Image (cartoon, rainbow, N blue to C red; front, side):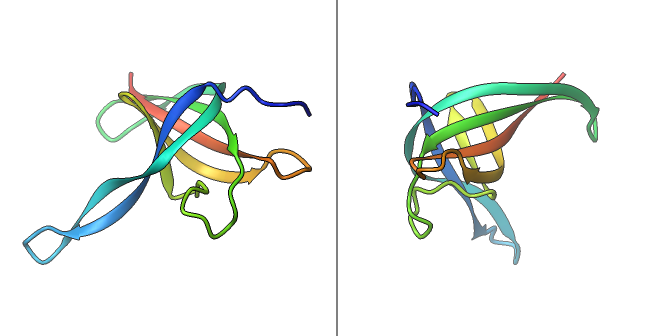
Length: 112
C-alpha cells in the first residue's frame, strides 16, 4: 500500500450526555478535533425508517493512525462532520501493516 491522499478536512465529534433539566439527559455532540481524511463511498441502499425511507450510503474513511489512548483516535461511537454531512462511525481498524493509517467504516443516512 502506498501513501494515502488525505485531502478532506473532517471534524471528529463524540456524544456526551447533559442533564435536560427534567431529570433525564440529552445527547449533545462535542468536537474532539479535526482530521484530514480520504473519503470513499462504497455502497448504498434504501431502507425503511420510522417515518420515511432512508438512503444509506456506506463509506470507508482513512485517517492517520493515533495511539489507542489518544482522544484523536476515532471510535465506533463517534462521527465525522463535513459541513452539513454526518458520517456515523460503525467500526475502526488498522488500514496498513505499518500502522500509519486507520480505516473507519461509516454510514450517512439521508431522508429519501
